[in-house]
Length: 518
Image (cartoon, helix red, strand yellow):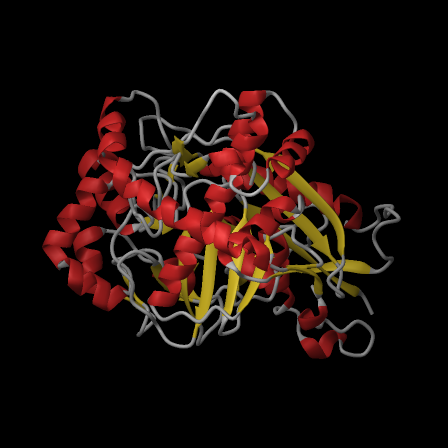
């Protein structure tokens, strides 16, 4: 019998990644394609959807070329392995508008880092009622919500809107190009506020007519359900291979580390910091994002910082030092960064501040401070931001009894330790932290029928990614970080009027994340 292999591909902010995974969860191969986003105006962050598809094709070719019939196989792939299913995920919520044939009519507008639709948020709040939106959708409108961005295109690009018939996000667009199926997963739909009702799991038709008139809405599926099967062979993936509907990358990250149970909190260390708490019942929050989960019957309360790893990349480029040196110097700097305190709002801030005009602040700077102090202050700033988010989640009713960390930032050691010391949380670091592409492959594993492979090559995803280590807080630092966190919370209201005035004067785009790593 053939050995079932899984392919997972994820489109992120700064790169696309893919993995070829065996039935036991082992990553046999991985591939990455770096890319950049476009910023045609301040606060506008866009990307050409053709890049998503082209990179998927390149990644799949790299992962599976020698799996095609008759090809000589590499030693890293077991004899008999065949791609049995494909998983997809991507950044979001994004707004990609296409014509009725699925051809994009403009570049995709990206998630909360794109802050263009502030006026449309105000208009929709006035038209539909802010409290009504919160009650029905679970979340207030913000730069993260897809709905106001539809309204922005309709108002500012009427000729483009007149050609638009369908809406996609990166995962659903890849699934469409592979299968021809026009579907969107329930989780992504729940971030399309105010178009989706998370209690009924249906589109809100009367609000769709207000926000996105003339758009044919996609059929809704759960992320792990089949979107369709591949229409054509693609490298080593044969025609007729099932493809999942997929979902937004952070939720795929949570799947990758099995952080999808009530009480779980996933921390994603990447270009931005993302938090996903799984809760027993739908919660409402003015400043966080209430969504449905990756699986039927699950609910989440989530948050995201606008920058985290992006700040460390910025400091690396600014100082000319490499990460190894910066980490060593930050370690030597010690808790409190020798009197430096930073607000990490270098691209505005999403949750819980919800202020696109927030800016970074570095307080306490003297001539004696070093780049190690700056780097330590940046790590501590992101940790204070995590603590602010976690406290807000808990105030809204989320239990966070188990914390699982994922993403490239988990590898250095110091960053995760600082987060644990600041928050008091113990973090589980799983064996594999590659992230969303691995979660997409894990979703795809559910499409492989159990009975087909149950005798020789069973797939048991519960055994795929066991814990590798724990990061526990140092109790000796609790008082120090409690005092610094109180100062951190005071710093934003104390400086917001000044930074808002400065934001109005600048000609640079605060959302630029060039050079940042996912």
